[in-house]
Image (cartoon, rainbow, N blue to C red; front, side, top):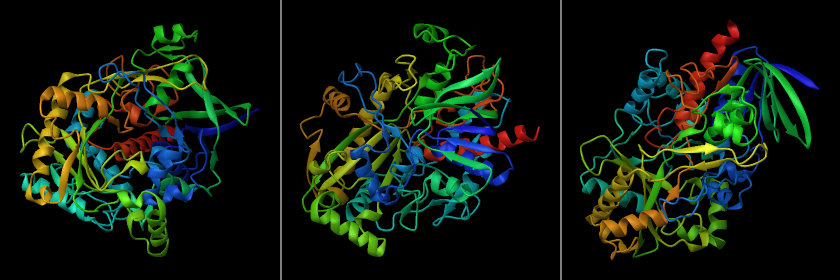
Length: 532
């Protein structure tokens, strides 16, 4: 049985929720949103500190694992993706980071004069979506549906970390989404009234009562249906049964791992990869699944002399007490994401544009091992413009199989060099007056690890994942680009990709805000097509 709609949106993550919600509110188009996960009903999703527990139980995660990272320690890395309405925006650490204008200058260069993708072009989208309670003026919005705030309270460890970076020579920057990114300051978070504000909260929920919006969860899209070169609908599985939905426009917003995977399963992609799995070629698109980028992260941590930060609240009665305090007052440890300050710096050129993002966690140890945390500070260093590239491929022709992917973390020697330089810089910060008197000793990599070789081994062993995959359906003006400047799949009609996979290069920092800006611009482009 086929149902007919004006637009089908595949994927209810940050991009898909924005697209479906805005289309339903701003047009009369009949919109169908298909999400493979469920609704965002778990209370932990909406409590700012709850994401740490959600990452442990895995209920809202696709359990994806990379190929072994032979350039590191030979082990695979987990790159779980959000599963359910809101996608990664319902389970992430809620950092709101636009990136640097030069990121978008490279996007504009990629599309040449075929589209408008500079920072100036995207700034109106950032402003319109933003309900910022801390900053106003020409660079920020105060009335938008996406709530953005600073931490309600900043704990003593994070305050000391900010002081340490300023004592090391980095300027204080109250607004890294403003005039410039360089500096240290409080995090900007997608939190409003002490609750997480995901794209589902901001854009989809206000539209869900609209008669022109249908939201179907637990629906796995298995194939794009074509009539010649025109996309006319999708096949999907729900409750063990296969269904077909038809539409005038089909929008893929399944993320940088699953958007290319769905295209390949539908016969759009590199000829050799499709032939290897016995999938008939419908449209040769050589860069589908290529150019995978992700932000590599490596920690340096130190134990504090006295009990400070949030380690004690990770388990047991203190955790329950923090939960009760939050429910009664909206304050306390449960009202925070645990990352209350951040620095953007260039370890090679202190006055230069940042190449590293350093998040300050008010715990020491592995944040994914709540029982193993101790009182202290972790400085999580991220190379924000990595040169390394990887790929996404198919495991087989089964739509239920997870994708095969290789992020190639630190595969380019320059990425490793920048990461080692950032660790040395952070060691200088830990020796500033603000931090040396409250830190007992360096836990990891440890004071005896001083050579480049030792720090490189530390990077290979401890590298963690930011879950920021981008670039696998890259936008460009060249023939090999997957989508054009209008986000249409090149060589196909009525088929669009609107999510982080279209980024020609990764942005300098957490990718959730830029992904929503892509979706916002995509909505405007799609509205033009609907009127045609």
